[in-house]
Length: 182
Ligand code: 5GP
Ligand code: MG
Ligand code: MG
Image 1 (spheres, helix red, strand yellow):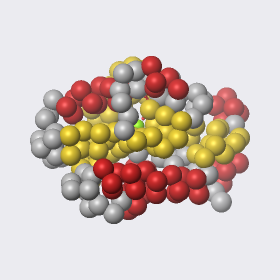
Image 2 (cartoon, rainbow, N blue to C red; image 1 turned 180 degrees about the horizontal axis):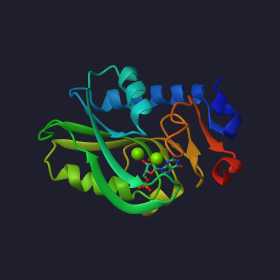
Image 3 (tube, rainbow, N blue to C red; image 1 turned 120 degrees about the vertical axis):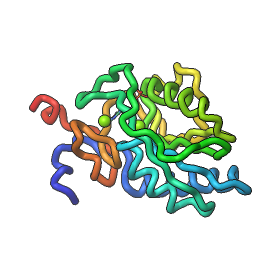
Image 4 (cartoon, rainbow, N blue to C red; image 1 turned 135 degrees about the horizontal axis):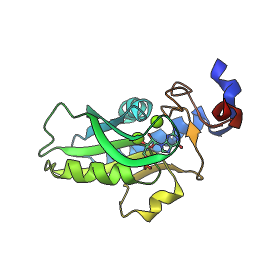
């Protein structure tokens, strides 16, 4: 229990559902990377929780890199503008990159990121996202591994924030409207 629970109107995905799903995703990834070591590239800050749980669920050894980009401000609307806030520390040439995302909404951030990372000549590049919204299906990106398809509403928890808060909730839920209204 967290004192943040009171701000959540409805739980959409429970801690247990997240745990189970990560086990399923990890099993698929282990099978697909049987002879390779994926380089997990996490997109901060949202993917931090998912990345650390996924890495521990994988039986394959993996390496971890992080990148931070901005696409949303402190509110709930996509700006459509992507900026690199923190770049990768290492060269990804000839690596089997697995981009780890928290959520794909419009898909703008990911299509920009894919183009950027592809230009660095990785050996392969795949995408795993915990959540995907229906709008994401309008952009031409093939997402290799998807945890949950969710309705088109703003969610928080398990890495996802509202104004930098709620990332530490262990489940994913919908905020009470009063929280937005102040
Ligand atoms: P996209 O570019 O696909 O529209 O959105 C990318 C980023 O926007 C995500 O990585 C995430 O940080 C943020 N985002 C999109 N939808 C949501 C949401 O429902 N809740 C939260 N907290 N962030 C979201
Ligand atoms: Mg993200
Ligand atoms: Mg955010």
